[in-house]
Length: 187
Image (cartoon, rainbow, N blue to C red; front, side, top):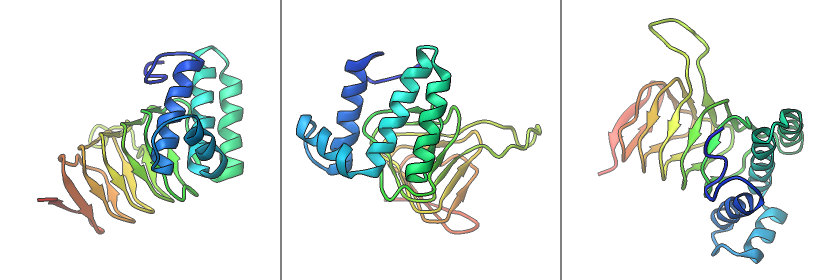
């Protein structure tokens, strides 16, 4: 597994990543107080902590531990983040109930995810609609109920509106809303 943490594998890297996650969640400077506050009060940060510990466990050959931690997050928070996803530190989960992040999805730093977001695969398997996971670049905001499906890239600093289903690449700095989706530049 690659990208286990920003600082590398191990407890130090795990704590550094959790500090970045909780700093974003609480909108405070990173530090021990922010880490403890975020882990105490932010369900999104708590779910990310379970994901990060599970990913570390899977990387150490303890896949059953990772699977149990994934189930704990599902039961406690209604958030399903695969330990096989590659999530950079410093993302924010706001009101995360119903959030799903599939295996091998990639999410960069500064991304904000709201409730009911699905980042995953279309499961078609055909040549016209290949399977694969999305890549979400830095600073993307994904609104409630949105679905990012297919092996696509959502460009940096883009906004995906609530309940929008995205199955095509999104250029950096775009706003995508509606059903069917309408792609616009932020400028």
